[in-house]
Image 1 (cartoon, protein in one colour):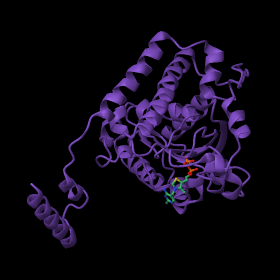
Image 2 (cartoon, rainbow, N blue to C red):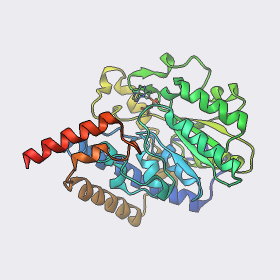
Image 3 (tube, rainbow, N blue to C red):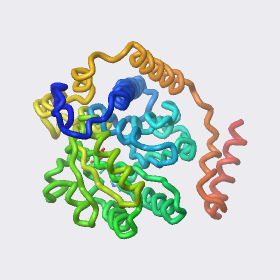
Length: 337
Ligand SMILES: Cc1ncc(C[n+]2csc(CCOP(=O)(O)OP(=O)(O)O)c2C)c(N)n1
């Protein structure tokens, strides 16, 4: 921990410089605004579903901020704020959750892979990209995000093992928010910590306060630079908490008590930075408001969907069944018009 929950610096080494902290602060303000606006859009019926990262924004901002332009980020469905921090358009990042059109953004534009809904599958893809970069002698580092629940998946273990054996330049950031939907960590893992899972594969494992953006910038930044220098992968376990329900479709009151939520709310990553740096600048607040406005305008705009698009971009050569289904659809649509 570099800044404690009351905003007091602990005096530990590795404190990021003021410029990095100020940038993180601005991104945190924008990230919280993004979460709040997305939740409001769900209530207004404009977004189908939203898995909020309210309370976890420090992990998301730091994960994006420590990367260089050529690096890659592999997010999950909960990592929209990380994607936006890296520069993905806030409306495009929500397209998947609106249910409009495939992934919604071009992964190559900002080197952000699609938001992965199947748990831990993105970790294998992340390792593949990192391994390929190493074979090509490119300086790329990959930041692979997942939750605590995903560490029980087979794909998580295969990804760590392959990365360790081939020294792939990848940093695995596990946001341990205590729950996999309603399943608490104690029913998920008997390991002394999730960082130990890295150690079991021969990867450096480190734990960090996931609500302390200064500590996250220091730990993740060092992990990225080690990976870039050819020193192999690392696992970082960030201790944080999901303040809101798993998604709007979940009732968190059925499996956790209010006192626990309240105790974590006191460790809020933004309040902590505000206590240390003072209130956010007017420019930071205005930028966050512009972001929210852009979300409202973009998500509230009705799109004209072409049902025929369902058959595009999945197979280079469509299967006979898909051709048959497409013909049926075309026939039905021509009779409607
Ligand atoms: C392979 C797979 N199994 C099950 C699910 C259903 N599922 C969606 S979210 C979730 C919990 C994930 O928890 P965690 O990895 O801790 O991430 P968090 O949602 O807390 O960010 C589950 C089981 C899924 N999406 N993919």
